[in-house]
Every structure is written in structure tokens, then in C-alpha cells.
Figure 1: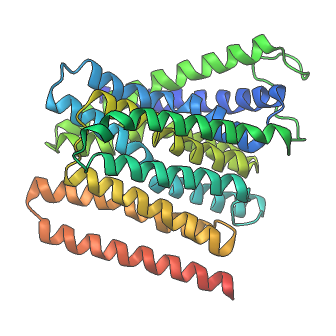
Figure 2: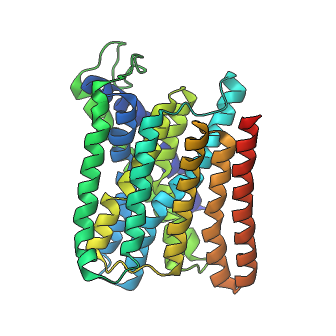
Length: 364
């Protein structure tokens, strides 16, 4: 009971921090003259990526080099983008459906095509490189990879910040929560609110991660599976909850950019630390996680290129790939390999069916 109460309190902290952060980051972007895409893809993504970066890096640095600590770190690193592109898509789909019903708005994300294409291409290419680095036993590639990934992220940031020159948001954000009057907030107030929100997000994510781990360890699941499934479930809440807030407010560019920008961050800087600090040799569960991540991301980008939009049905369909990893973890725990293989095949078929069905619906 105590662990459950702690997890509920932690979730409340993350929700409160997410609301403060989205409000503060909008005002920061406005003061810097940035467009919505740059605010979502760079500023929001960097701020809310702190919890999922801190957990695996802490596990690796303070784990005394043990195999278990390295598995926790690798699971957190690979599991973060995996959860964002799968369950994150489902959460955005539900937010879109709720908005469509309650506000009678369009049942699709209003996507800024150039920004979405840029983020997804950066993510798919760099994450593929991360997976290849963990498979190919070339020492020179392992040594070069961290520097290459850092360089790619710097290129991404420069590219995203070029939006400062065009399409700044003309709509004033909600008045700053720490500002007692409805006027242009001072820089000090904006920075103070952002710091307070980040403290709430990080503290809540750490508490929630600890509580989830305590519950999960009692089930006797493999270390990598637990870290890949449960640690990101806690630490990725900031990105997804920020996006729900922005979708509710009709700010789809910020919502989507927040998620895709975080995915780029998690396929470059965070894996760079993992590759630098560990041998970075990926086993079958890790490769399965990476493959499902790439498949879900490719599905979203392919649909967008074909239909120039993202709809809730397609987002929910991509989220089905999340269940591939839990099935494999349960198969290893209870020796149900044949059942897991059959259910995995059924999931893949269902994803293909959802993709084709949404294409036909939009054709009609």
C-alpha cells in the first residue's frame, strides 16, 4: 500500500510539473522569438528528457560496472524511444479522440510537415546507427560512435532553431503561473517557473521509477526487460503528458514536436553516453526492442508521406508494437516461446491491417 501511495504521489508531481513546464517553455520560446516547432523539438524535449537520461546514466556510473547495472542502463536507453513511439502514440491518439468528442475539432494532428519529416528522419537514421554499433564488433566504430552522435545532434539543433526566422507563434500563451498579473512576464519569473517544474518532474519520475521497480522485481522478470519496459514508463511521462496538455489546447505542432524532438535526443546524446560508458553489445531482447522501435517510427513516417497527416487510428495501430517486448519477457520467464511467437506474429499482422485500413479510409 505504501508503494502504491508513493507512486500516486509521484504521478501527481509529474502532472503538476508538466503543466508548469509547458506554460513556462511557451513563454521562453516567445521571448526568444522561436517558432512552435523549435520550441517543441528542442527546448521542451531537452528539458523533459532529463529524467530518462539521469536514470540509466546513474545506473551505469554507480553500478560498479556490474552486468545488472549495465543492463538497467541499456534497457533505459533503448526503452525510452521504444515507449515514446509506441505508447506515446497511443496517448496522443486518445487525446485526439477526446478533443474531437469534447471540442468537435478535427480528428487528426495538425502536422507541420517539414518539422515532422526532419525529426523522424534524424531519429530513424541515428537510431539505426545505434543498433548497428551494438551488433558490429568493430572497436573503431565503438570509439567513433559517441562523437558522431553528438555531432549529429548539434546539426539537428541548428536546423531546428532556424525556425526562429519564420512562423513564430502569434498567439499569446496562457499567463505565466508564477506571474500574479496578466502581462508580459519577466525573464526571472520564466526561469524560476521552469526550474521549479523541472525539479517536480525529475523528483516525481525518480520516485515513480523506484516504486515501479519495487513492484516489478517481485515478479522475477529479467533485468533488461524490467528496465526497458518500466523505467521509461515512469521517465517518459513528462513528454507524453506535455503533449496531452498541448493537444487539449489545440497546439498540435508543440505536442508532436515535443515527442519527436525527444526521440532525436534519445537516439543521439543518450545512446552516446551508453556507448561511451559500456561495451554496448546488444543481445536478442535489445535487438527486438530496437527493431520494434524502428518499425513503429517507419510506420508513422510512411503514412505521413503517403497521406500528409497523422490520424488517431494509425497512432493507436503503431502502439500495438509495444506489446512485442512484454510478450517476449513473459515467454522467457514462463517458457512460453511458441505462444509468444504466435502472438507476436498476430501483432505484426494487426499493425499491417491497421495501416492499410487507414490508407483506404482516407482514400474514400
